[in-house]
Image (cartoon, rainbow, N blue to C red; front, top):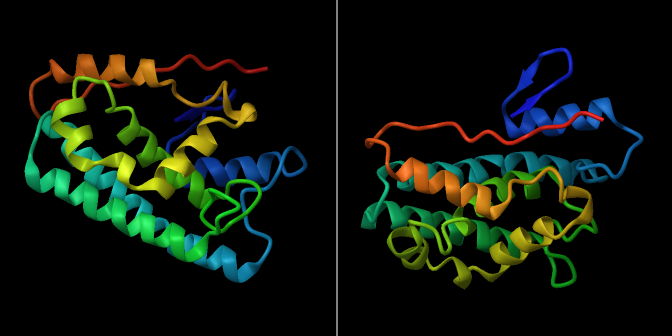
Amino acid sequence: MLELPDGTILLDTRILMEYMEDAYPDQGYTLLPSDPVTRCKMRMAYPMAEKLFTAYYVAFMSKGYVEAENNAIRENLQIVEDYLKAHGNDKSPYAFGTENPTQLDFHLYGALSRLEFFRNSVHHDSIFVPIGFDEFTRCVKLYQAISERPELKNVLCTKRAHQEYLEVMNTTPPGNKIMLYLPVVYE
C-alpha cells in the first residue's frame, strides 16, 4: 500500500509499479524489459505470481499445518522455479536474466518474501519447514537479490516487523486478519 501526499491510496503491486514508472520516468532504472516481446511475457506471467501469493495467503489464514495448503505452496513454488530456470540465466537472479529486477521480479518478491518470513516465526514448523522453501534455489536467489538491493533498504518490510505481525495474527480467531502498518516518510 502506498498513500500519496494528496491522500490517494494505491493498493495493488502492479498499479504501484506502473505509478512509479509513470511518475518518475527519469529516476533510477525501469522495471520494464526493453524488448516488447519480453514485456508481454512478463505480463503473461503475472497470474503465476498471483497463484503463489494466493497459496501463501490460504496457508497463512489457516494459521497452522494443513497438508493440502502446504502442498499448494510447494506446487506453485515449483512452477515459479521452473519459470525462472526457463527464462533466466545463471548470471542473473532475475526472471529474464536482466541486470535489474523487472515488475515480474517484484511481483514474485511479494509472495517469496512472505514465505521467507515464515522462517523462524510462529509458523516455522507448521508452514516453512514443510514447504521446503530452500529447495527452490532460484526462488531463494530472487528473494535475496531484491532484499539486498541498497536502493530498496528503506522501502521493503523487514523480516522482524513481519514476524511480529505473524505473532499477533496467530492469536486472532481463524478467518480474521489485522493490518500490518509500516511507517512511511515523504521526502
